[in-house]
Length: 213
Image 1: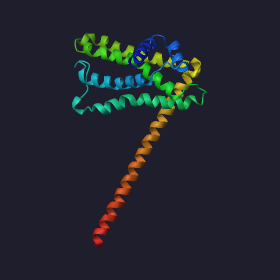
Image 2: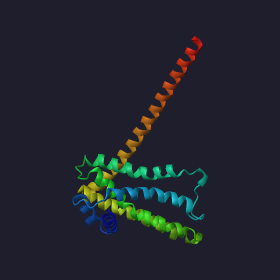
Image 3: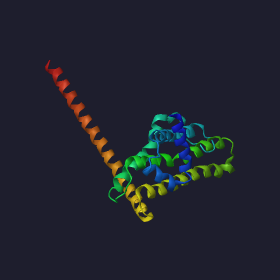
């Protein structure tokens, strides 16, 4: 078990440097590990909490007394899950070949550089001076650029898209994500109104029953 997990982790390090070959094998030869992917997803959220709490004061403007670690983790990983659902729903219209599992593995493996560079940036942020802040920011930017590169090349590989098709699908994914957020917001708003209405009715019935007695 541990040996397999170790081999899967070694393959993760291979994937971030050889995305075309690695994501092809993840899709068609089942090289990906769902447990490892989920651990990476949680680590991504935890890393955000660590950065908020332990980054140096020069680069940290987070009000810790207002921070809720669980909420921070959920807010951090929610956009990634939204992307998975949105891209899958759109890619079916463009004859994409990826399944939800493939997209999940792709996005979780792709965030590995962000996790590593964010962790490295924490001690760095505590020893730099103001003039060295660009060095700290370069770690952040490198992680994001690396993530975007892995995502873009990975989507081309697992969806079997051309570059143009991939760009069009990503734009459609953005529209789909906005639509999902709107519908979820509308759903929760309506549910709040329904619950409020039911509570009001119950209070009225209880009040009228009390008067009747």
